[in-house]
Length: 410
Image (cartoon, rainbow, N blue to C red; front, side):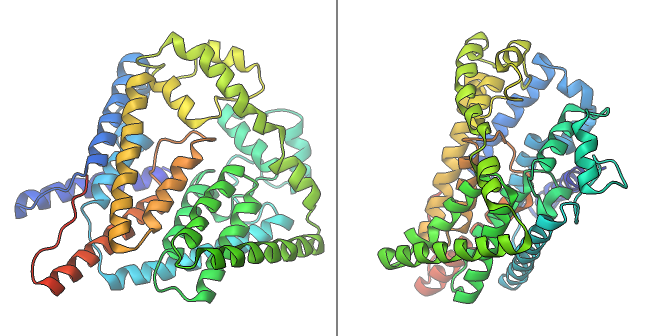
């Protein structure tokens, strides 16, 4: 069992315990609107896996502790019904700061030693990176399609830092959420903000993924939009970014990193054209199953239209409607809107925007990649921190006024 499935099984056990505790104590289970909507979406995908495809029959009981969408639904219930002290979250803040710094250091090391601290379960053992490049260039060597993609991206220069032991997307989803959690904490010392920002920039750019860099920009923008003097901070931000990039280029040349090749082969790669292809293919295949979708499966028609130029429809929201049709697509978009509205109301009330921008970055990422599951520890922690600061503000308001303060949330 891998780490994600193990965490899923733990969540199932904890949720059973939580239901039992609520039954014994007579307390209430908190189910916000966004959790209800995502639950409906999860149930819909379950029905798709039963009646449209054979996904459920292939997994059996394992589905309920391994399917990422179903696990996200259970994780939402958990994070909305657990509470931590300020002291405990302070400890969590320190752990996350160390995590981000260590991840940045590992990313730098992987520039010169790509195999350092990498989950090598897909790789042939005992070969150097250079010999491994030649080995996989000659064929797939019995690897599955997913494994071939993972190996290919690694050989193309995508660096996952310490996050490869979770999955390939963890570096963008978890690291960016951690950055949002930390940079939004008030008060935050200038040195601490600079360190976590620098670490996030290193992780994002060395990952070579445009969607991660986009998420970094989304989260970092809160430094500007939420400041009192936006113009001054904007100028500082531009000056700091230019200075950092100059230093980064000098260091890159010093350690032998090819900056020009990185820009041409990674940031300006022709893979960006696959997004245009995604729209062309989507409008061809979507009318075939507009209401219910394909149930989460790729059709032969879609594969034929892609013609080997791409492995999938590379725009998340388009693939959402292709897989789950109008019903599933509208359910997911309703969840997204309700979720962001709730987090925005909480952030405006308590002044902590870390949760909002972490989740916003996740949804923005779906403009390019396809990920409907938030079963990642970064976004889930971002929700916990957002709930904490909101509850703390309510408690402080109650103590000040002598009456129960409240804010209507959906």
